[in-house]
Length: 334
Image (cartoon, one colour):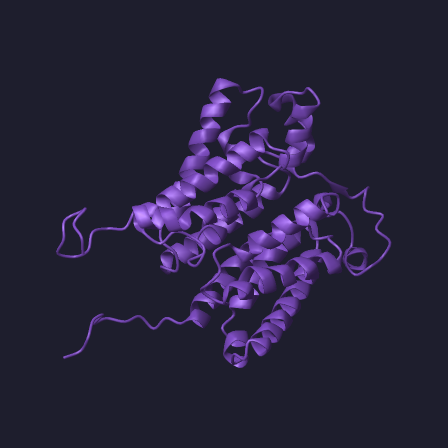
């Protein structure tokens, strides 16, 4: 007789990671179209750095290099880092963040499948804490030509003040800290229709890619639904209580990394919760912490810090939400 499971899917790490890369393409294409091709340079820098660090660490650990380089997991981490960073960030900062993610965030804990923290969010947290000024230089819509953007990324004179600006979340936080109210601050053209000129379309493209992952069963519904639902709920409560101090749910859902976080970051199968109820708690916790950081914290977007804080809680969440063993009642010893 054959052992269970009796049905198997033709699934491999390479296939899953390749599907995630394909699902990221709509958002990457929209961002390049709206804000210029500098993101392409960031993707190339992060990808080459990730592959080099992966090969170097595997060699030092005496592990086979070729299988790990071709399973696409390093590229997924690199792409997630690149799309989180400002497109005009200098090349060395992108390399630093990517190397930190692969060496410290991944291989320090044993490599693929062993890391307790999301490596891409570790890279973002390192860079936003270390280089807050550089991490705030986001280009405006159709800010400048490709040659100029590539020149700034690869070491050209960084006269970027005229074509960069704060993100909508940063602009809102600054406006509130200087005595303004949310309604008047968000009348600026930089905020576009809902959450930043052009950024609404980028967010919807992330949602489209995320729906593809759901349709192909690469991820389950628990984390995206809990993440988006909790973010909508807590932001709606704040907005209804004090609309002059807190932005609307639509703004919080379409601004910053909310939808990317819901579908591509929090769904990391290694650093996230694994049980169905645990996934709901994990994602709702990220949304709550992210909103609190946005509303009261020193950083404009709190997705990265919220993910890392909830990563710490994953072992306890999984422990407390384990379903009963088949054949036993809840609470019985296995």
